[in-house]
Image (cartoon, rainbow, N blue to C red):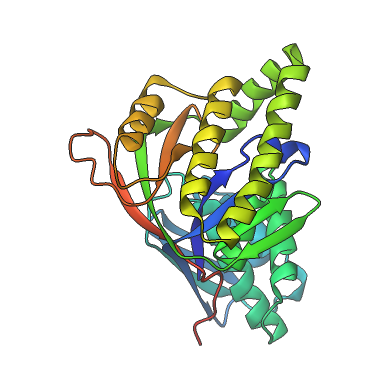
Length: 301
């Protein structure tokens, strides 16, 4: 199983080689692999059921990441198998389901085929290959959180700064999300119109991530919260804020129990996160009380 994730800092900037920060959350996806005596790959999940011969896997929109991961082991597999996938969160919300299921499938397949547990960096790179094959582009930040757990300072070099940390988060879903590739395309168009502006934004984000690593090493959540709030202002300057997202940020900022808040993910919809737990009973959006978990991908023997 592997945890879902949330971006804490560095959206969009990470795609250009700048630093970011992502965390694992206490909501997991579990994959159970059972070998069979035929050559059929079967998938069972809340998204539906699937079966196809392993040597001729038919594409399926609900299982693109799973099937791509399976294809990477096709030459090493001598028999069919069933993958039972259970998730503690909806794939419709930006909690990193694609990364978590990809990491879990790779971990299960590697353990079964190779007879050993993969080291974390190998699991990361195998999973990143899957994400890039499906999406065409991806920073890998959410994969690093699902593999390592805790908080990970991350860049696409790649560099990893894993921090074992537990902390409360409040995530609020605004009710809709724009597909990430569409948001990236819009930001890239805006960046092309004013490259100097976006270079300044990305450089400041990079500096904020390093300050955030220092703050978390000191367990200084107040400073970290203020860094999150500044990152939100920079995302607003990028053009990925919306009235709904700003309404949520304002409600979170008004809560006495929170240290800071920001858009989490590409923007133009999806989630806002706050550091701390807030009830937000007057806010008409789904609210999720989460924890940053130090537990990354694990094996259940």
